[in-house]
Length: 310
Ligand code: SIN
Image (cartoon, rainbow, N blue to C red; front, side):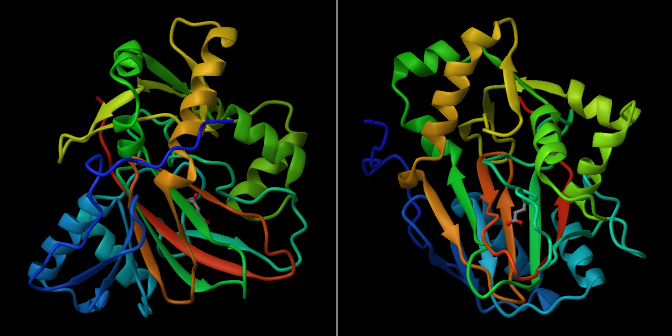
């Protein structure tokens, strides 16, 4: 279909930088790096500064062998900034900012939390800047997370297309994810199981209605730290473009979502227990897979406060 393009050299550099206190091993040409030589529970100020730099360079980082308590997960998250509002859960007992993403082995749902390419919670007025996800139990195969670099995708648009979209604003809403959950998910005490339970509700809570009304954000946003421009569009929550009819906006949103998520701009993370991954939610999209039926997957996430996208 002619969509797939390998990005020419010069559009993005994911090569390893020499750091003094950490080792960063790039995962793919498009994005991602494993960070070695760091124990998150004892991370020094020098290491932390380099990890932060590496996050903005590689967009997604992961660490192996990190057996963290909820409190240690929170402490690391807080070094990156205050907690963001989480749109789906109110945490685990005693840790209201540590959000369980657990799918039980007997859950037959036809949809999993995080399915569909998305950026985290763009329907909020100030979506989270960074997400930090830690694994406890993972399936023997499947349950990977894929990521795509939407700054690289932006750079690979023609100048004419970039001019065309530069002032557009995207309407992000929980609407379609809620509908899918109501149609495909078992009612359980899980982030998405609770959404599914609203299928019986006569009226949605004011909080859900707020997330369905959603937010309008620039289609091209500028990273507040690095100044990088990226496409702020996803397949799950982008439901329209301000001032356009659905007929006008859908082809643009579909094209851009497909463009961002083409394999040349993506990478795939294979989880193992005790991993910690973090991504720059301002300029990458990601998705989870519902491909491990019969196996349990237990992860916990925190999110770091973000700003109004500009
Ligand atoms: C998420 O979308 O934040 C969850 C990703 C995953 O469970 O792999």
